[in-house]
Image (cartoon, rainbow, N blue to C red; front, side):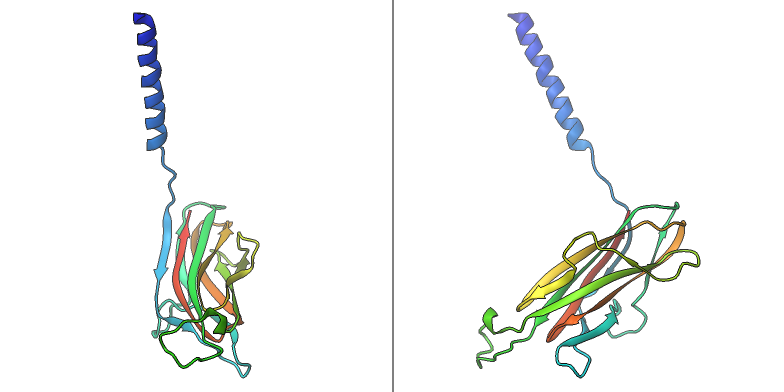
Length: 184
């Protein structure tokens, strides 16, 4: 009986050690760039109501110079994940006169695409980075929408790289860029 009790204690100790080992194993990501902003970025800007001319997202708000950001990789062909998040707000297509009411059936339909681009170290120039998801839109629907896209890049050279986000689509309302994060 003492042997069985000893075996149970040993199995319990090994199980606990295994679980503790799993619990302390962490996946790690190194953040290479974080940009945040909550100000309105793009409003419709053409003679076609609601058409958003393709535009670069500016993370400096009213101050110029925030359309390009840089990140650095320490090795060639290093995988990086670029994430962009924004909120889109469609305006009411039918105003019922009550500023307190929110009727999602009265909002105009909108869609916004986002394209991540990088200018890798070296002479390559700006390149589109394919999103990791199949659905090509950043935001679509009625009313208010918060969404994001992820794109995967693998710059062929180590060094300093530029990144930017271009958006376009159809929106009677506004877009607020929330964050741009690059991690490896």
